[in-house]
Length: 125
Image 1 (tube, rainbow, N blue to C red):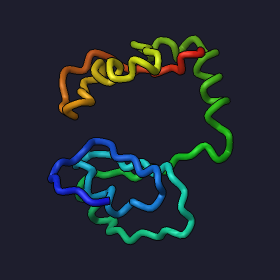
Image 2: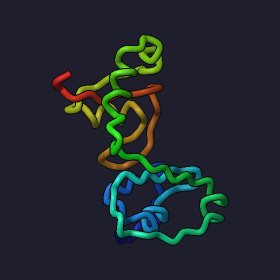
Image 3: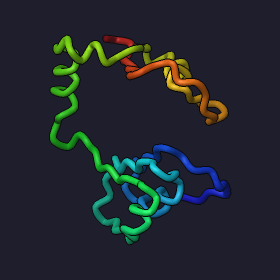
Image 4: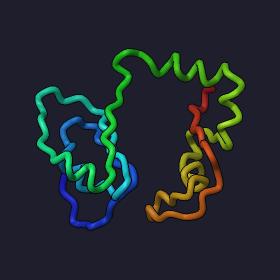
């Protein structure tokens, strides 16, 4: 991954599983790098001090143990979780959902956050 921009982001997601080192350079101070792709041949070299000095977290996540469906059911069935969700949008209105969270997807600029927890749902639910 190459970039000619000095921009940094709160969240960067590596969905290929082989971009940890270059993705890390795009994470802003206090941000998160989510590794969601699998490339078992890839190995990365990073300096833990860079993570500590910049308050960056690396989070690994994948549904390899089929945990997403039970988690979604738990959230759907438990009334206390419904209080956390402030807005819900169909997938076709994803841009509006991100706008509600203060992110303009066209410009990648931050704006006013008008929500707590936003859920984007498949249209068939």
